Image (cartoon, rainbow, N blue to C red; front, side):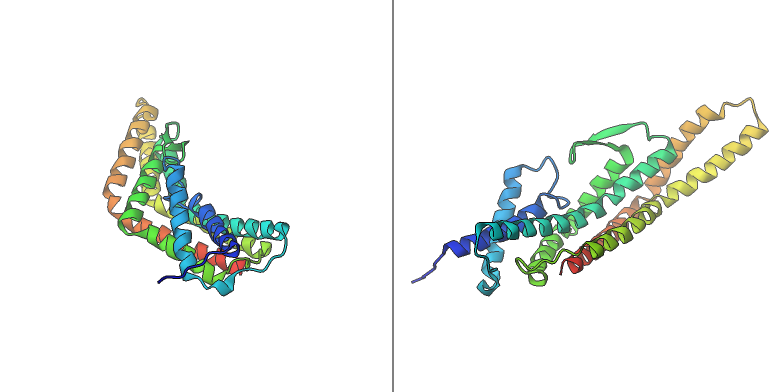
Length: 260
C-alpha cells in the first residue's frame, strides 16, 4: 500500500519550482517561439516541475512566515528562470546578427521577412541561419542540455538561494556582448572577404572602363557572389551551431555563477 501525503507546504514548494521552470521555458530558445502554443509550454513546465519535485530533497524547502515573504521568494525564482533563459536566448541571436551583416554586404538589407518564430521583421540570411540553428539544435538534442542545465541550477542555486549580484551579472553580460560582435563577424567572414575582393575588382573596372554602369552590375554580382559563398560554406553551419552552443553553455555557467 502506497501512503503518499501532499501538504500545503509541498504545494507551495511545487509552485516555486514551477515558477522558475515556466519563466525559463517562456524565454529559452526553441521553446519560446511564438508559434508554440502557450498550453504546450505550460504543460512542459508543469511536468518538468513534477519530475524535479520528486528528485529534489524536501529539506530544501525554504523558510518563510508571511505571504509577503512567499511573494518575494516567487519573484526571486522568476528572476532566476528569466536570467538563465535570457542567457541561452541571447546566444542564439548571434546568427541573426550575422545574417544582418551578410545582407548589408550583399545588398539585401532592404529586404526583410517576417520571422514566424518571433513575429518580427528579420533579414533573409538571418532567418535562414536561425532555421539552420534550430535544425542543428533539434538533430543534436541540444534541447535536452537546456533542461539538464535547468535541473542543475536547482542543485547550484537552491530554491530561495539566489543572491543577485548586479556587478557580476553586468560583467558577464559586457564580456559576452564583446564576444557577440566578434562571433557574428567570424560567421560572415567568408562573405565579407568575398564582397571586399569584389568591390576592389569593381573599383578597378570602373577606372579601366568608365562607360560601364558598375552600380547596376555590382548589385547583381554582390547577390550572386553572396549566395555562392553561402552555398559553398553551407558545410560550416553545423560547426557554427556547435560554436554557438558552447558559447551558450559558457553564458549559462557565467550567469549561474553570478547568482550563487
